[in-house]
Amino acid sequence: MQLDRPFPNIHTAFQHNTGFERMVELCTLLKGEGNDIAIAKLLKANLAHIYGYIFPLLESQSAQLVQLGRDIYLSLGRCVDMNNIDRESHKVMHKIALVILQNMSSRVYESSDGVREDMEADAFVAAIQSLQRKDSPPGKNASMFQSANTSTVEAVLHLKTWFERAETENEIRRLTDTMRMVVEQTKVESEQNKEIDASAVSICQHEILNLLGDPKFQQFTVENLKMLDALITLCSTDEKPDNQVVLARLLNKTVLKVIEVYETASKERDMAKRAVEKKERLEEFEGLGLLGLADNAAKAGTGADLDVWGWNAAGGSGGNLEKRLLSAHSEQVSCIP
Image 1: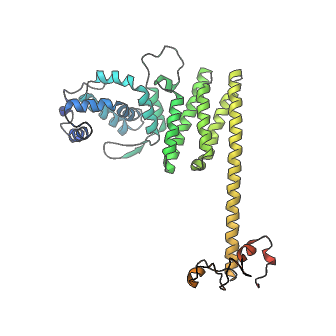
Image 2: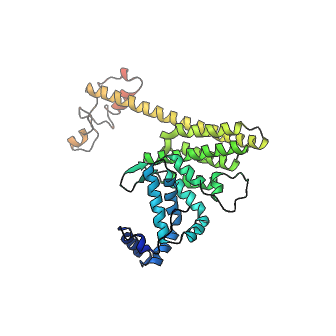
Image 3: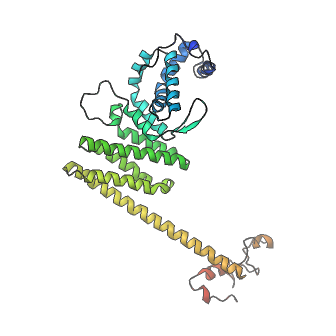
């Protein structure tokens, strides 16, 4: 990628803005010195994160974001020798791909004028696809991640870690979209190569089943089931013996997990229903003056659980009145002890 000739040194690169002062402060904090050599080493050490940020910008449909990516790339070229940078980038290509994948889960970039824009998912896919190993054999049908010197398995394992760290609904939604992209890419590549990548299908299924069984991701059950359906459809279209084995394993694990999820959801639904019925019944009897208030014991100052008439609900003739009123035959319970 040749955009411009680099300037002689870093001071010249940032002479018209405060970027150099910020870079010196950061480098001094991290490296203990802020000269040109130290700054160049810092940039090279973080090359994967820099390129992982730039490449999706260059693939964006937003003119502002594309310009931002070009500006950052030109600034980098004015700080370090781009010939060395290009050689280094091939060594960390797999890291660049994983950084792009991680950035996809946020997809929010800020342009040079401070406007925050939501990056389209296709820009991240195109950025990963633009990575290509120099030693890739010609004509070999490598997957998108294999071309970037990594694999679908490694990508999904990193997604698993990010899912575990996610705390907000928005983070989980972004990660779910990223997982969907990996599944769709696996499907497209398998159809193009007319050969199913069993390892990619297996790792995708394994992670999706984990998401289905975790209450943290319950609100995205429909999306996860759709991804499983896509994998099952992919395996069922190919009648090769090996693929049928993959399909059988996929179906067995999926059916067991779906049954487990259904039973858990049914149990939670029944518990919620009983809780609502109990609450409504309590409110009904409280309205009739048959049940005491929760603070009766505190008002009485005895520490005992007393009902509205001052009876001890833990024992005596008035004991377990609440349970009797909430029982199936509560209409037959006499309120007179």
